[in-house]
Amino acid sequence: MFLVRRDISVCSKAFLRIFRINKNTLTRATTVLEGNVMASGFSKPNCKAENTLELVSWLEEFASYTTDRMPDTMSCFVPYGTRKMDVYTKYRSESCSSASKSTLFRTWSLLSTFKD
Image (cartoon, rainbow, N blue to C red):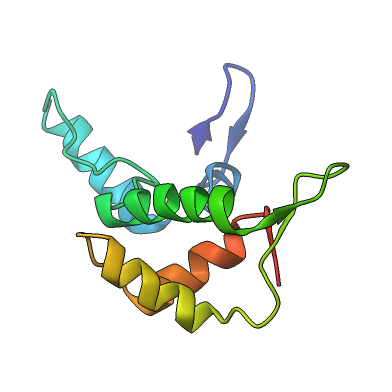
């Protein structure tokens, strides 16, 4: 049984679901705790790679120079006939970092400002 608060205890499966962690993370954390280790050595959650951050910055700059912004919303429309592959080719020619095509397409779909 795990204590969630002082007065609430839950089974291990419920604990994993409540905190959205998997069994391996819990096992590793308890091993570290039992070993009296000061630092856990876990990686930072949701840290983005440097290439992805540079890609987001480049896409925002691309949007500010080439897209049509709507005055009433935050959305941007790319010019007619622009393909994502053309944007990727332009990114590769202008940027010194190299994110993959799938990263560009995934980032494009996650940015809410772009409308196809």
